Length: 354
Image 1: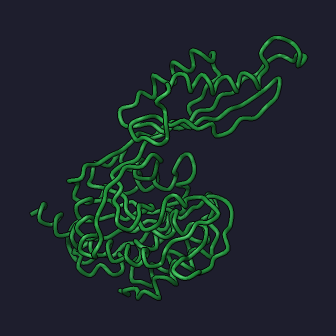
Image 2: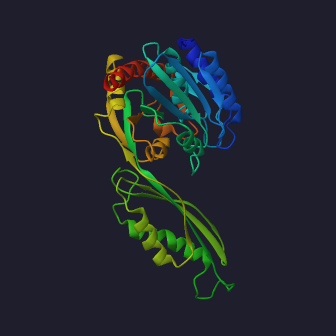
């Protein structure tokens, strides 16, 4: 087992950033991640979905899974270091958190049990195929930590779910000046009908309210398509919304592309407590928050009722933007936190199982 020095940890992340890995094109990075995990003493492989999966056993004990994602949105950013900042596509979302997990697993000599590290594919897509494959092929672990940018002193307790919809309409050919509605107009009207049904409180700024996005709209007089994504809070009646919108738009025009439930754990969740204790022990002031986006935590929480939370260094406001970068000091802090949290969590889980 190799414990990563600060220099080696930075080199690991730098190397991951140099390999472009937009969704559906993660194979080169997966091979690189498997090699890095093997070099650190983990047993590693690429699974049927293309996920990079590594594990280390340190005697009998609980299993903790650390799952981050390898894919990024399209668009390259030159990889460079500027002072304490490392720039590159995925530095925050989410190669930085994944590299943190690899380093923590390698350095977690205080943990007794099994640590599984997953670099998942296609998290940035509608279907999250990598996490679905892990959910299908792995037994639920005793605890789960998702690698997303929470900030190095913050634990994420939950995420909104989402409802992805596609509206498609066809109309007979007609002159543009004809009074009958055109397909493009009906597609635009579908968006306003959705907003009307969600009401004035709908917002991406609040966890307890739905947040709609007009993802795309295209077409012309005879045919048009609009795609909507609604981030939904816990307890939201997604089926009721679909039924009401379908009634307004007409039969056979609205398709549910995907739906994922919201998820949330409490502050007393063992994973939340272990991460908070570790942040404090490293000199930070732990905070907790919920996020209005959606992550692989949602996908796994649909089937796995185990202690879980999300943690990773990085400023999530830089997700997907052209200024994406991670502060190296926070990245190294995050490695120390996660390494310590594994030991803390292992002791808690072992005590529970006695």
